Length: 308
Image (cartoon, rainbow, N blue to C red; front, side):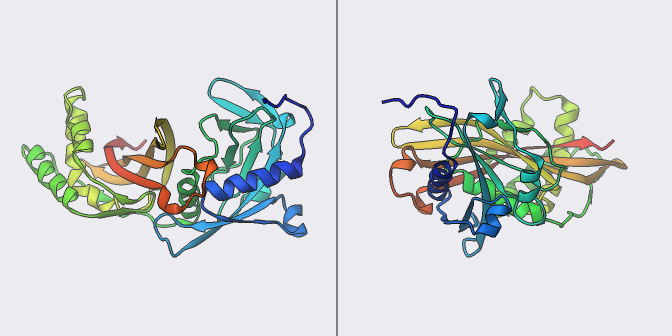
């Protein structure tokens, strides 16, 4: 039986439902909030393990919004919600940014989530990509936001050697050394360096100037792959369902601002990482443990961009 759409929504029931799915998706312990926390725009607290530092426990707050009254507009790619600035301010600040969970009216098949960027001004109204709905990859997103909110480290700028006729041999040797090392990246944990990024950078469809610039940077990538970027974005690619298992693919784009000096001019280093997260297709219908969710992160590309 399909539930009919309605205009009145039980907020308490929606909060209980959202708390249950949040706990399952993030392999977290969830608790109801106190009266003081409720007054502070918090409906649910959840505690879960860091994706890389498993001994570290992360606590996050969530505010649940339910029903059609919060939907302002929508298009093919996103949903715009009328979430007031006071709610966003209460969930922002120093430390872990809070979650907003929207429970659509019936009939529905997913809950949507939104979190403020801890390093940019608040934006209203709230626009949520339609690909940003609750699933087991959320624990990776929340862990990254937790770390991102507290990063203060700035990578040391590197001066690239003058252009020579040995660019390709030197780059090939340096890239081979990168492949032999085990990398731990603050965004993804273990980072694989394979032929994937090398094939992308050296393909003939790229201009010679751009290819040469990327090759000159190879010996200096070791100074950045294990360090937090100044900024990053996570871009959803797609879901591949193979029976009982679903694989989610996305790309992380990382900016290391003013990271390189090339021929006397400042350049930013951009690094792209391919992330694949695998989890049970019917994760809402069974007990889900952290061991049921696996992740593989691979260096996909890098390039240099001249600073303005």
